[in-house]
Image (cartoon, rainbow, N blue to C red):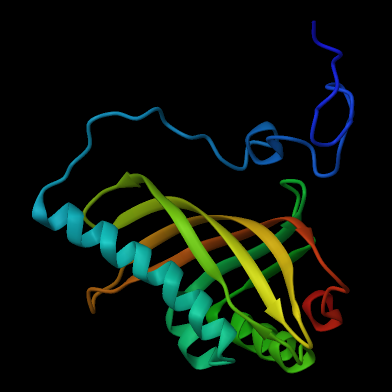
Length: 188
């Protein structure tokens, strides 16, 4: 007989938590397709790998305070948003130069060492020159010990530019939660 309580947490099955379960889907930030046949031609596989690399390059460059490399991951007119536990962003930047400026301020304000671990990259749509993708991330923080800084959902639209690189034209960071104080420079 079930008591309606989780053995691991002791919470009732109806307990509301923050963030809400499935907030990204409920807030219509993502709409995952079911697993289905896709284009796995050599060109499509190469595109998928390049898209995954764009996510990885963003995270690693952020961790190494290489905002020039972060900027190289975005189109000139890119839109960058950040939210916490909901689809509505609290940060909205437009344009590569503004993204670089803001991220430069954020990494200067943080004195710890972060390591973005971006995984579960799903390419939801793919044409010759456009794509949409989602990914997960965790961000461990090393600063006089080790903590988990954030769990993250990334939502992105990408464009293959003339040089053959896939760049983010829209990039949404949806943090489930964030440990510590958010950088003030993010919301100026």
